[in-house]
Picture 1 (tube, rainbow, N blue to C red):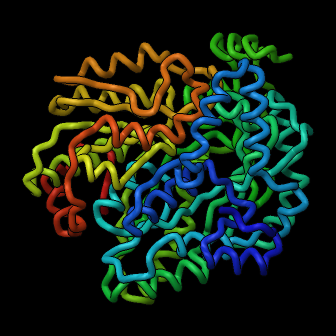
Picture 2 (picture 1 turned 120 degrees about the vertical axis):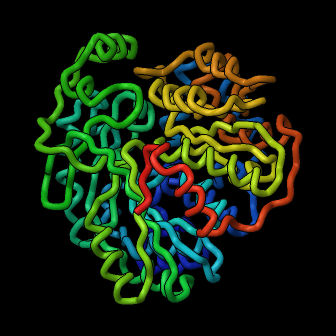
Length: 479
């Protein structure tokens, strides 16, 4: 639940009592993955991505019966309803957000804490190890009231330039990565601007949490996704990113293509290619990339307090997924659990507790586009076949560039030895099946019948044993 005030003092009080600060997006990778990790460590499951009550499923089903234009307007209005007016950016405080984040977790001793990039595979790694994760990045959605045309990125940059000053002045520990994606975020961006911010310093709240929960000699895992994107520097701590990881490439966003032309024509745009701001450098990708300045502050803090720092380094967000999947397989064998079921998660659709209760092996995809399908199939082609494959797909409401058909997704099940099925997906309504944000949880419990007791946490020594055994087999590096 969101705190009912943007006043910094009141927001801080509410954040310490479990309310989300009013300027934080609920339907975002960082907030969703934080909630999922926190829920598991509290001994809870994760229905409705942590914010959507199951009782709303009939309403969501009803929306999917409406004409497409009405569905899209509801989606746009719902997204804009999460956003704050731009004048309230002056109320944003990074430490208030940090207080909410650390209070998602039980305040107890942990052998390690992860800090850094958002990654769904990391949720499952943290669940296995029984440790918290503190995000570097989070999304502040800002209403623009139609002042930004979705297909005019230069307009978006200028709008953001005029409204970012108070946010940055009040939060010197943050850098703003303003993101504008008229492809997969076509609906949501019609009502709001994406102000993603990244922490450059640990800050008082994160430091206090680490000192309270990490014993002397404990480990801080730095999660570093090194994915970059061509971006434009607006000011010292304001970066503008046009486009985002998904189906379209950076070159297509910047220079156009036949796919871009077809897409814009399909959505009756006045453009057939975008007139993008000229990039002046490659910088950390807004949603997934890691800002290295935070590493230096973590290393300083760890040296002062006697903690170990270990880096988890990978390039693409999904690079960690094969590693975690094979780790779970290995762990199940260590526990003498006979299971051979793959559960494929999609963006925010994740369920760490029921993954372990059903003895499933998790494989996380960052979204529902062709690169995610490629990552999944590359993994399946490189490992021993699974008996069963179950697949979640996030519905974002747009027939965007690089979106595989539901028939193409169904072909994944041919790689299962026995059977495969979608979890929470209505094949006829996808990618506008909005009740999937509820049904992924209920379908998972219904479709996979196996039940196992929740295990004791995987030890760091066991993780190291697996890393040593599999060294060089994955596109992820532990240092």
